[in-house]
Length: 416
Image (cartoon, rainbow, N blue to C red; front, side, top):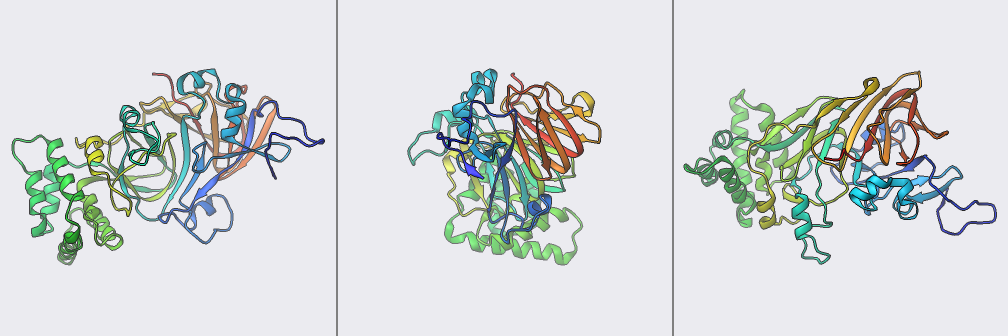
């Protein structure tokens, strides 16, 4: 395949529009927490031999997708938007978000825990973003996200009540943790203030004492295991695994501070601004606002911006994130979290050709996760195998699906 250029040879027709449906070539990110086999198995190919963490679909400058045109030329999706913005994005998306795709679509293959992190609100990102190196953010956008479990997923999400955190920490019988437990038990303070104080103690723990703290925590956890304690085995199991990976990071205590969420296939979790979270294991489809703004709390070698983190983090204990499941026509299911940037729908496709719900509109990415599905609009068809995707322009006609398999449709969210 040849890369797109503005020049055309004598045998090539100049491109005047993007096809209604176009196959995509997407990048795989090789972060060290990625699985060495999950994405290859999903795509029925030979593994690369290294970690394959995320398949990215969208226009993010770190790994923009490429449209594979019918004649074999390749057109980067950002360039397609630049050249044919109204046709590709549609007038409504342009009016709401400007000349950009408002979401980023991914498959996550998690073999090792990610860092504990939070994301800013739109207002905070706009206020604090600058183009200089002192900026805590890389762009002026928020980064809410939703994860759908293709296979079982474990994650940490939101704070436990401070009394429960204090109880779990107390079971370790660690003298070094006594100031932390006291902060969580502080009378006269509301729950959010107590949790914020506890988090601040951990992320500012003296560097010279961090390894000793983790060693003391490890000894306490080993004692609990030797005693055969039946309570919270998954929590302390993850504590032990994190100690093995990060022997000098106080945030190995994250499973005791944050709720452990265990998702079965088909379940989702929505992560709004300020909510601390860490994905621990599993395979899932993720959709998020088109941003890469991350504030890390721990379990990472990267910088922790303590001041900005404490200003942004939501320390009020939370219920599980609501993804707002909505049944659509012909048994299509949509998840519409309380943000405008994205929505996600799932369609199980059988032999018979079927239409899709028109309320999922605008520029779409259609991802196949099982079987083989043909995507058709305006007489243009692209057949997708598992792990591959197609881009559908906002101005395309009704979308139909045929074949046997499962697809997800990513699109801008509804106006609110």
